[in-house]
Amino acid sequence: MRASPKNSPPNLRGEFHRYIALLLLALLMANLDACRRAPPSLVVDSSIVAYDIEQDPNDPQRSIPLHYEQAEGKRIFYDKCIWCHADASPAGPSNRSNLIPQPPSLSDGNVLNSLSDGFIRNIVTLGGSALGKSPMMPPWGNTLNEKEIHAVIAYVRAVAQPPYQAPGRSSSDYGVK
Ligand code: HEC
Image (cartoon, rainbow, N blue to C red):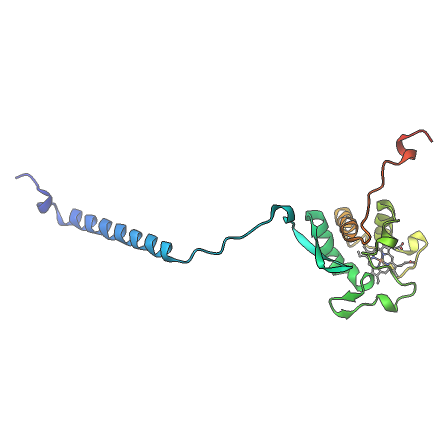
């Protein structure tokens, strides 16, 4: 006798039922998912895509977008430098007002913009006394690596008020003296 679907062995029929049940379950899940409220779509303004931002020290309404290296520098600044180089620290009032000579705020473009990248790198690496400045400026050469010091400089340049302008080509490097 030939096996009709009705007479198919019970184990095959069981398999078929399990298959149907799974299919129904999958359809049910898919429907449930569709019923869920769609999440609010994220509006990204491509002009302000940044790793981090910093508040403009002179204008609380304005924030300065930071690219990756500047954002890394911000992290280091808040960890190591803010205690002496800002008007307020995460722990409250800043130490800056207690120090003589008073360290400049690192966003003070009037002071920092006149310093070259090389000078800042050296004073941060070697400390104040190595450059004839106050020994209260600690040397960071054993704590921060070159990349991190570079990042701090990038951050300082980004937040400077008035804004920092990179110097033009130095005539002593390429031009006729
Ligand atoms: C313990 C306090 C202290 C900490 C922390 C500190 N500094 Fe200083 N820093 C000073 C003092 C004091 C001076 C001023 C030296 C002088 O004018 O003789 C100074 C000067 C400087 C200057 C030179 C400014 C100028 O006018 O020539 C730079 C740049 C600087 N610090 C960067 C940093 C950076 C970057 C960090 C963090 C990695 C840092 N400092 C952490 C105390 C500190």
